[in-house]
Length: 398
Image 1 (spheres, rainbow, N blue to C red):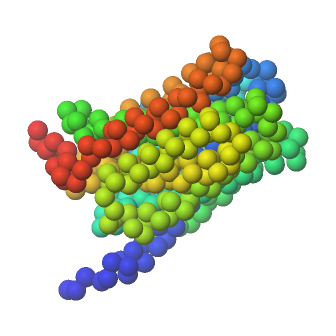
Image 2 (image 1 turned 30 degrees about the horizontal axis):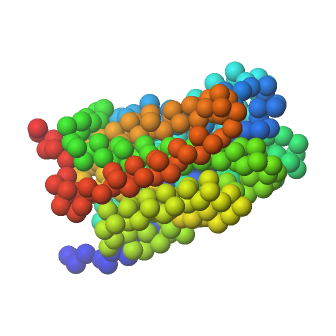
């Protein structure tokens, strides 16, 4: 039997693709929206910068802790049902968080949101390998673009909603309602798709692979840049006299920039050298973050450049586990290791950088971290040539 054209095969899975896009829209907004709202959250709850940074640190830490559970839950309950549970944690946890009065309750419910994000992130990579292995970068670009669009929307509406409705709770409530709508859409798109359940086992991390540790370094450094900028760049510019609305737009421009580069990689990514794309992205991010320090008046342009770089770096980094093995369990293990270790590194950044701000009284040292992390990202990408990626992971029998 003649195989249908590749485009036709993708068209036959359009509902699942639409579901992946809807699910991906929920995986960042609950964190991204917090950054420009930190000044009002601090005033409302009476907390320090370091404590406010926990609202970003906790979800990122949970994304590390819960990442290894994704492949196990996919085997035990099926990937589709597991994604449904993850999206429910994000949406329901978000709605509950805005209803509790004190800082303790807000922080506690942030854990539930983070658990959903951690499980959902890993399951996305497994789903791509199981259902769309013939077009890894294209489908990775589709769901990473969804993550970028969700981030952009959250960054755009967070401050205007808070201003219009006199508080950060109204802003996060609207974002949680959107997550609930995506959950309903996900269920509708996947209700007829087979809920496959491969062998249920905790992933075995490829700890002896030097290539695996390079992927961990890339993912962790990228997370430090992304979540660090999202949490503290608006506050840093607010210290320089920018209004809440202006700093909110800086965060929005950053996230807007991620979308076109992610979309472009969906078109050309399967033909592009991974190393070349990662190195170019790292160089652009280094340039943008240096200019944010040296020439703050041009911040909108530099944030747009940083966003373009981030979109390319994120999509290519997410696709790397797919290049290292043909076996979905190996891919899941690599993705879980990358996210577990990478998000542990990332999770330290927001609260630690907030603590640096508390100790020094300004954001000078905080802003210096980002070009350094971008340089290290570029250095970690240099060894990832085609031959190294084709060697893949150690054998499962090893």
